[in-house]
Amino acid sequence: MSDATFLDEAMAECIIDRSEDVPSDLQGLVAVIEELRETPVPSGGDDVVLAMLAARQRSMARSRRLRMRTQSSLVAALAVAVGLAAAGDLPAVAQSAIHALLGDVGIHVPYHVRHPQAQSGGYRTGTPAIGIGTTGASGSGYSQRLRGNPAVTKASSPALKDVAQPPAGPGAFFSSLAEGPRGQSSRSESLASPSESGAKGSRSSALEASEAGLPASGNSATAVGHSRSQRGDVGDQPSYFGSTPSLPAKGKPSK
Amino acid sequence: VCDAGAVASGDFDVTLAAAKRGEAWGLEGLYRNHRPAVLRFFYGQHLAEAEDLTSDVFVSVARSLTKFKGDESSFRSWVFTIAHRRLTDHRRRWARRPSEPFPPERMARHGTQGDAELDAMSSVGTGRAISRIASLPPAQAEVLLLRVVADLPVTEVSRILGRKPEAIRALQHRALRRLARELELEPEGAI
Image 1 (cartoon, one colour):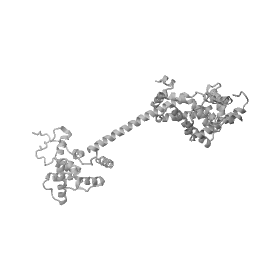
Image 2: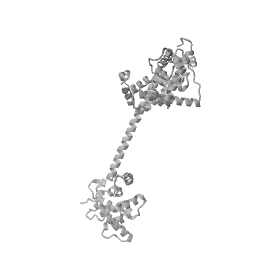
Image 3: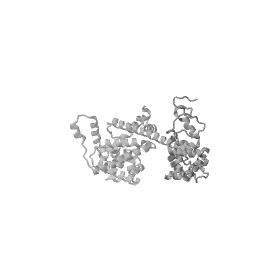
Image 4: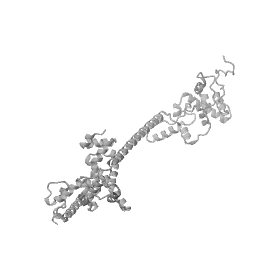
């Protein structure tokens, strides 16, 4: 077999690479290789395959756009959440969670600080919108005035109930740790508003009074408010609004 | 809008970028440029499912096109890497569940006469070069097809098949020697 001995690896490379140096004895082999390169193929079914590819490409582009939107929405939501957490405006659970989460990576956001305004739902329930405010029947004027009075705020808010009861759950435990011992000035107290600081003092005196079975001295408004809230008659006209006009009698115009 | 000029001039980068953006003409350009070689590759393995496998390859190409980066030779190498994997999958599947494909000749008896596609299939099926390559051992046939039909260098073929370049050179050498021997045994003027 003369061809087989003549055809070494280098010559095989020359045949495949279309080199000019192929001897005439191997031209038959070169013709087979060239025919292999140019073998005609059927063209049927191209339209179906192309339609399938186009549909696939479209759906992929759609899902890519959807993924981009989802990612950007998540990033925006995260940014908003971190911003709110930095401002301390998130609800207690979320604020605590983000405080713990970001604290692990060295970013400080404030721990949850109770704001009386955040728990304003209690002011509206059962409070008639009469007499005091000038904003009509919505009751907002009355509620705002109530919020301005620290004694009433603490008396009618659930925060006072929290003081009277032992802290429940890990959130309350950590909250009490953050606030420090009662009666001392802690960081959260220094952040709180003056009215809230005053309310805390009156809150502790109310607690002592209730434990001793005596009315709290020096802050009768708190004691009154507390007892009213315990009785559940917070909707009554509070007595500590000395200058508050009395309710007009039905059918009798007030002057 | 089909930028026919870009496809016709073979501006691969423009076509690829359009295909990545999801434009139909870009994908069509890539398909029409590379489909014949892929189809020859599968026909050279003597596979009746050559067209189905070719479609599978281009569906896979379309699926992963956004991740591809490179020039035209890299793209060709990538396409034939996918083709090789499809071929391996097909062989494995066939080994587990062998099936006998319905031959087109028998189908022609049941259908209309003079179908252009069947004629084309028949002409491919009886192509001498394809028949000769199909008679080689599978490893030799695949190396020769990747070198000749896909026009890939030895290094790329070795990467696709996961063999050393020396092994690829040895396989192509053996394949050509075998073809030369068969040609020698044939009567004069057969080619």
